Each structure stands twice: as C-alpha cells, then as structure tokens.
Image 1 (cartoon, rainbow, N blue to C red):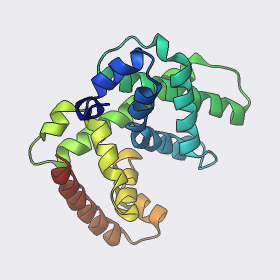
Image 2: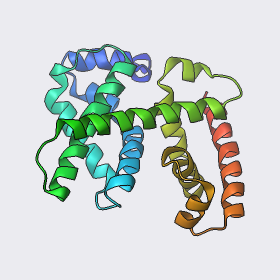
Image 3: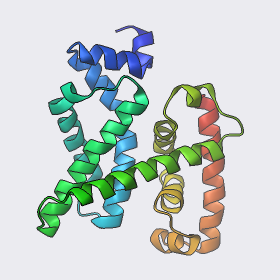
Length: 204
C-alpha cells in the first residue's frame, strides 16, 4: 500500500470496497480511539462501568465487517457517521441485556443522537484548543483528530477534559470523581488544555 493511500481515509475506503481486508482493517484502526472514547462516555452515563468500552468497539468492528457491503458513502464524514450508528446499535443490545427489555427503536435513535452530540462536542473542543485551524483539521474529521490527541495525553489530563467537556460535569463534580479539590481540578484543566494545544500543533 502506498504512503498516500495509507494517509487518506477516502482512498482506504475505495480499496476496502474492492474487497481488500487489510485496507478495511487499517481504516477501522484509525477510529478505534474515537469510538472507544464515545463508548466510554455512554457506559459511564448508563452502565456505571459494567461494560468495557474496548469490547464494545470490537463488537462494532465486527458489525462493520459483516455489513460493509451495505455502506454507500464515499467520504470520511459519511463513514464516521455510519460507525456511530453501528456503535449505537451495539450499545442498545448491551442495555437490553442488562435491563431485560425488548428491542426499542426509540432507544437506538436516542443513543445515536447522544453519540452524534458527543462527536460534535469533540469538534468544538478541537476548535477551542486551536488558535487557528490546522491543515489536518481541514482535511480530516475534527472529532476524530481530537480523540486521537486526547489518547496521547497523560491520564489525569485526559480524564479532566473528558469529564468536563464530554460528560458535561461541573468542576465540583469533576473534583469528586477524581478525588481532588476544586482548585486542583481547575488548574489541572488549564494545564490539560495547554498540553492538548501543543499536541495539536505538533500533529498539524
């Protein structure tokens, strides 16, 4: 595979459509961190850590392999939206198992809406963390770029950003979750944003 193809999600999509398993595998690996982050937020809200986010992502990837022939989009944005739909379906399956309920289309729609909102928040955090849009942000899905950048931060930096921005907790709530003082959490958040900005500059 050429370096150009490897760097371009749309070209990987084209290769995957020709039946290239390695191309589809490489494409999915690019969204592992993004989907894991979205799954983690939902698990925290609804399942209190009873399910492992990475297991849920693997189930999502299995669904992609099973149904890839049904995907009709051509862009990264369309593919990412489709991935969120599959993740929502897998989340609904898990919730039904734990709650003992039957399939409810409304639940899948609600989960899809919440995953879409989390993805939009990621994009907003990326824009707020950048003094000017990078070339990478112009080319790629912003929410995916932000999720990848978060994955490279120290754990406490990543945690404070996820809790405050994605789980939408205020600073006193974040402090309770992290076992810190409110002032400590605020200072940590400032340092985390600064580290995130530097990470994004290096990646641009």
